[in-house]
Image 1 (cartoon, rainbow, N blue to C red):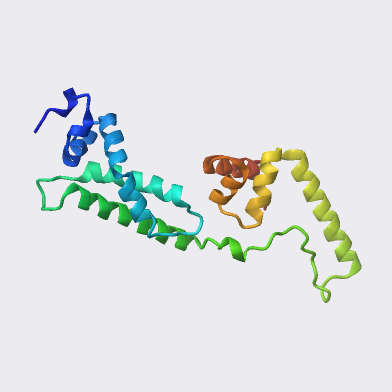
Image 2: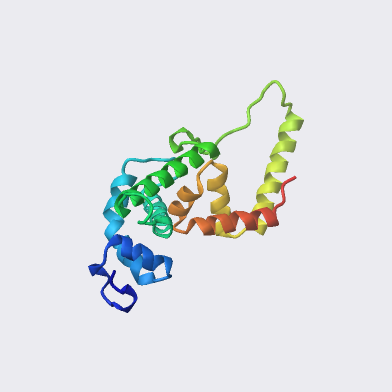
Length: 194
């Protein structure tokens, strides 16, 4: 086997050799193998769908699976080529993502109804006094939210309450899913719900 660590050009080495270098912490080796496997990850990703996940999410998950495959692959054990081993790892990762998304019970976007414009209507239980008190509670809550939340936090909360996923909120507002999560955490601290 060639001494990869002294080489500048990673393109001349096999996938198994690159995997060994990745286990040793060589970042250039992972960059090379991820470039080689973009097509495979994309073709496997095209077979899978999950609510709240788009193609870019699956590509990221595929790269994570590829890194795991590099760290776990041992060509001395078994006859599987690295490519076959990586394909299995990537497919299993995608199946895990789908199981996780299904377990969370993500509501498909087409079945969501926006909360704007919905009026409370339970004519048998609400008398005029109850209606006025509810309107006042709603007004107070709305004012409290406006006084305590930033514009971004208000937008995140509005979309979150309408049933949108973190991914959808992030895309809609042009921010990362981590920013969505951070905004929701700040909202929970600012407006504790009992």
